[in-house]
Image (cartoon, rainbow, N blue to C red; front, side, top):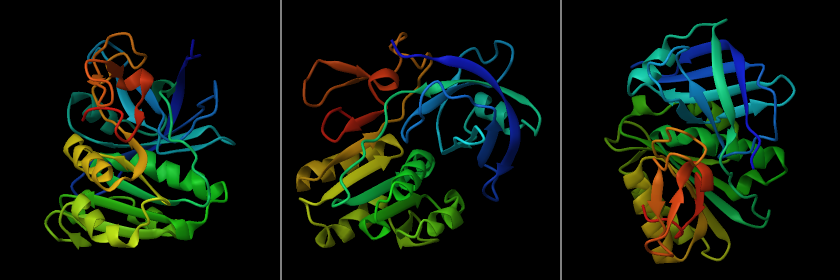
Length: 269
């Protein structure tokens, strides 16, 4: 059984990341490890000390500093739970459970890696990219595509550029970077990518992941996708996040417990 430790951490910052105020980054300190946190894993957050909202919210870990116990979460305000989170201030307490779920695999250093992050799918891939670079992975072998509807939907651009990898921003309306969907930007890069040496990693809205998986299967690329789904319990009990397997029809996985990271072609999106 996986060991889970609920703990109360202190908010050290909570700031807006874009001018519309939709995206925030909250940092907490005092997160004590029950085990190592790896990219792709998530924490389950109780956003209110009472019971409204009743269920916790799942957020991918955007970064973690083992030395200080500082943990970063990037989130978008989409409803009541995230609105409460957006009003938190320095010194407030936040109840967390984690780390939960599985994580991205560590590929061989001879592989070329393509990260494809759409909207709120940025945090786990940003963490993954930092993790690989800190592990000695060559920056020249990593391409990072990051897309949003408009330029105001793209956040943490300075952090992405500091990674030193090939960075390709995309916007649906053409207000910044490649004009078009992120999967269209990837298609434009496919002639440069060796199928046998390249792995694709994705996280973002479900339509984007579906298109990315179809593209990868069509061209024979291997890799992994981090799925997003409502995760009321976060530990595989409530079955609120099940998905049918693509490789085994009528068989199902729990995104929170068996994932959220799955191999390309493993789960029906």
